[in-house]
Length: 501
Image 1: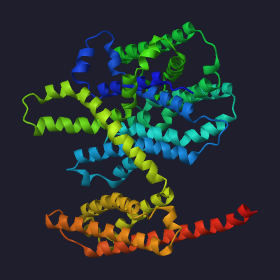
Image 2 (image 1 turned 60 degrees about the vertical axis):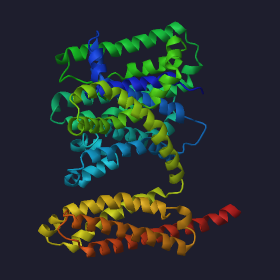
Image 3 (image 1 turned 45 degrees about the vertical axis):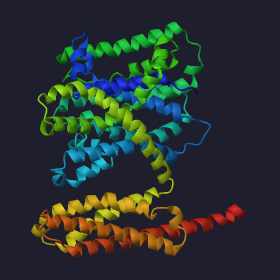
Image 4 (image 1 turned 180 degrees about the horizontal axis):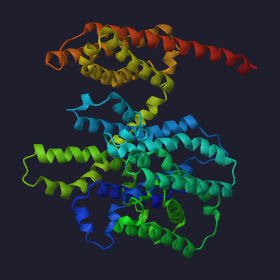
């Protein structure tokens, strides 16, 4: 099936609206706001909803293959590779912005952002890189999509369309009730909860399935396609203008971010997919397609980059008019950074991560993270059993925890302690890899703590904590690997008779 590149640039336009909404438009926003119908510049909630519908549509185009078995693990791995590297870079940049206070932030809030679950916790939904709440929503979609697709294989297109409409109606009714009765007291849940955005994604998926099964094979007149394209676009535009111009027209300034306009958006997406007019030819221009492909990099990086850039201009750089420079350069800067990040950071990282994940046992990796987290807490708790004494070492504990969380994982990858071939191979090699990895990590953490103690960050250097942590991590790591090794070897023995017969 040919690529529908005319859809790609629309993603870039939606991301620019998000930047405008976050007051990062600069002189470009100031200029455009003088034009008629400038209300559209503040329609980012509609843009977010459109991105969810488009995401579902594209997922269906790529993965809806009724004649093939759905590789669920492969799908999840591909989506993590596509989203997570830049997400993590954006998170680390945000942590750098908050460097002065990062050790006072609750570890659970940091973990919620690392594991992309912050939007499920209303009080955390706008923490750190506040734009990244939408990644929680996307990961929720990715978790559901394989099972919905497998179910959709056996359903008629008519039934799928009916299901998506019913889901949309129910979702809008519930969201509308919550919006009227509990907004803004429960804004974190009403606006950012992934559940309220599922209807947009499912409508996009069903639209993609209709396009694959029927739409692209039908002979639809150019006039009908263009009329539908124009009607759906105008309806969304008019709603945005009217609702923004008259905020009291709808209860609590009802926003369409939760899929209110999803039916018209999927009509627009399908019509543009079927369109072969000059409009699509223009949107298919390589330069516009490239901008569309870099939209994710622009979106996920813009919050920390803009924060750091603004702080630099106002506090570090000796500039007489920092705000003027910021306004003139912020949009071009983000587009440039998006292009550089997409081609020279994101793509190389994706290729590296794709190769690396093929060698890593993911369940064992997650179990290691649990071991690391528990070990740091238990070591400090055993060493400082008095509540007041334990509380006085909270800062050191958090430093060691954050260091261990990332460095132990990196060391495990480097020394192949998560490599299935090593785990099921020579026993001596496995023991050596685990021992070296754990011991190296403990030495590094000890050095970090000692440096902190030397420069006055910490009041003491408790050597016994690191010995206990080393013993706990080493013993539990070896135990989990011995159990995994025994299970794998037993599975291979069970499979041998059936394979030989």
